[in-house]
Amino acid sequence: MKDFTPFENSIGIKFKNQEVLAQAFTHRSFINENPKSGLSHNERLEFLGDAVLELVVTDYLFSSYPDQAEGDLTAYRSALVNAVVAAEVAQALNMNEYLLLSKGESKDTGRARQTILANAYESFIGALYLDQGYEVCNTFIKKTLIPKLSDIIHKKLWRDPKSHIQEEAQERLGITPSYEVLGQLGPDHDKFFTVGVFFGDKKIAEGKGRSKEEAQQAAAQAALEKKGW
Image (cartoon, rainbow, N blue to C red):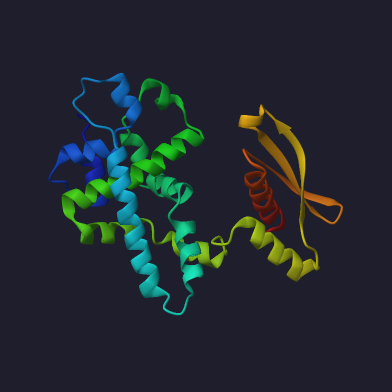
């Protein structure tokens, strides 16, 4: 079994059950490649951790923003509890060094690795809950994930990019953005779209995605970044 002592030292938490800690970092691909390892993959822990994470964040938002409407709190939570932010936190915690992956997965450093890291963070929360209980999870999440919230609120990242760019463009320029499909690849069941966002006749940015909506959101995000909004 991998030595998780350096990781435990870095987060200041010593697990009673080392097996559940190892399970949190074990990807299904590792089990497929090493069926006699005696380990289990982390998907059940991820399921548990996701629920604990959502409860801690919901509790924090409810207590910290008593005047905010339910819709805004839901948007804050969605912007905080998602794969992108969880992967960033996992990376900052150096979880990447402790992942148990197949040889093939170990070579992938792109989007798939980010998803694995996000899942590992949630799995770790599940393992921590089983080993140490809710209060330790609450403290850990407030230390590692909650600090991301202030930036999300300050930069208005809780709004989806299309809503954000429309509000900014109307307020600053009196223009409502429009979207146009610039290209599409692949068969009907697996399309990949390129969409442009326009202010009047001027193309501001492009985005890609597996649906028109996903590509529009990506284009809107690219436009926000280009405009510095």
